[in-house]
Image (cartoon, rainbow, N blue to C red):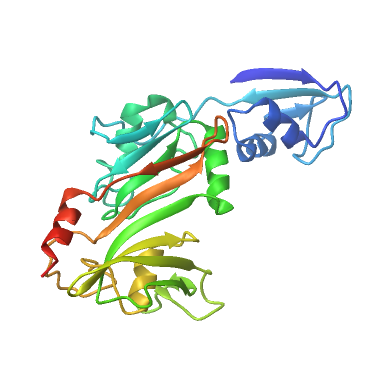
Length: 302
């Protein structure tokens, strides 16, 4: 462990806030965890995160070594849309799982990112290093990865406060009307199929809001831009299915039959707009539709 020492020279805030300002590469939650583990002492005594510091207090911090990642780095090619010292944005292909889980111990985005950024191990958690948000396996498009604890906390804070602007492109069955609208319905576990999510009665799930805007009508389908205002599991797919317009190719929330033979659902994380941790400047990044989805639009579907 690395030892750090300070003597408080001014009237300061509570302990965890004081340390967060001086250890900017570590999140405040990580610092609070160290305090709970007894790795932080004030005047040689264990203490609480909420302790108010006074001039003359002596602080000692034992910074733990990063935990070794249990996930192996793998030389999997990545399409990197943007990268700086704090983050990278990857254009994830359909079929790639974001992080290891039962049945997917390798070949994931995390495996690929650990090969690209070995120092990522342990950032934001050992099992999901760097992951700030997720995409379903069959959903393609932009996903954001943090490179250090400070960036992870900063980016997660933007997601939590709904500052991140996300735009998805989806092709749905039928003609969606009105051409612009909002779907507002709570989402929870489907009581009949526990592996699925569903719109549930108020009080039994979490609030979920999805805005949409029609981009084009085809013979039997509609291309829509979708703006999720909350981040519930399978939110877009569940909401669109709930109003009678499931995502094309979605064999979980739509018809089991897939006449398009896509082998995936037509849902693409098209755009991300968020503030960069380094300076707070807005980044606005776009991923075009992948060829297999563009081909469906050009043929007009079955």
